[in-house]
Image 1 (cartoon, rainbow, N blue to C red):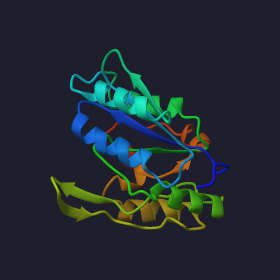
Image 2 (cartoon, rainbow, N blue to C red):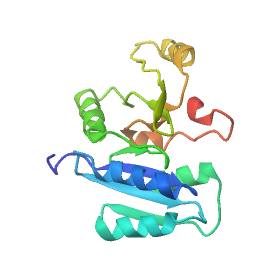
Image 3 (cartoon, helix red, strand yellow):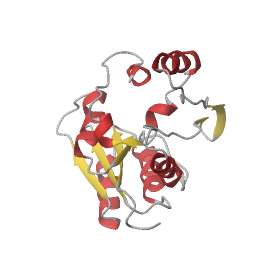
Length: 187
């Protein structure tokens, strides 16, 4: 991938999922899109999260690690990686999730090709252990009338896969994650 492509920040809020976090970090760093930074905010984990993150920091300078001195809650931890992002585009990656090697390049290509698009996400798949249990819903919100987009979204949303898409950093910083059940859906 050409280095003059926009910087993309992948923010990973983490808490006590060291074994799964390793896979999330590896999937972020192994993108076919090289111009990335990966920021992990560790919400005062008491497992091996810190040592895993420090290991990856020593191997790849695209990874930045932030250790919180106390558990600040999920919302603050999600906001921390967004606040520290320096990329033109941003995405959250769950510490228990992973992305395909071409995820960032595919999303960025769509965002660049049509500046009217503000969020691109992939097709989510949900697993229990190693068995796929659910293929997330994929739908489009490309409607000219705003209320059609809203109705279409709430008619179709069944999971939070879209929340983990790639979006312009400047735009997402203007939207607050509601501190409520389903806040990711509302956002």
